Image (tube, rainbow, N blue to C red; front, side):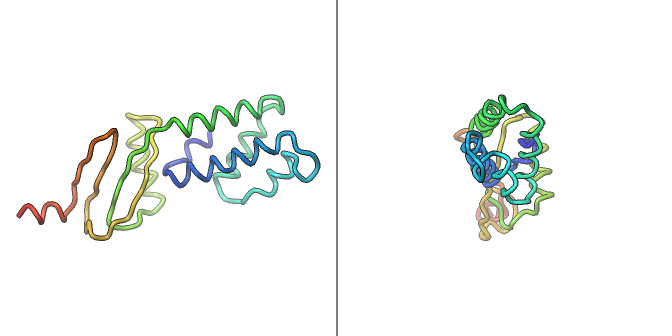
Length: 140
């Protein structure tokens, strides 16, 4: 399922944009038809996975499938994670995979703050944790 590829808020926003574009195309004619719009979506992984997933459903159920997927993404909990450096995709996938073992519908909102030096700041469910080298240094 394409949802498994959604790890960050940025990924979610991209997917939601594609969903809106495809929903609008369901009843379009000629150049605005679903098939034509789907062919023009970018070749990046999220778009291609979404198209492949939608093409496995019947034409009558595509709108419902897209609506359900949109609700799934919009109803995810957002965990804000502030780190010192840009995390590569592999690290993001590992973090999200571990978090989703306990919380299936979780998306990261990543922020780079170089002043952190190392560690992370986490904001989730109204709580804040600071586990940074800077905070440890300031305690000394």
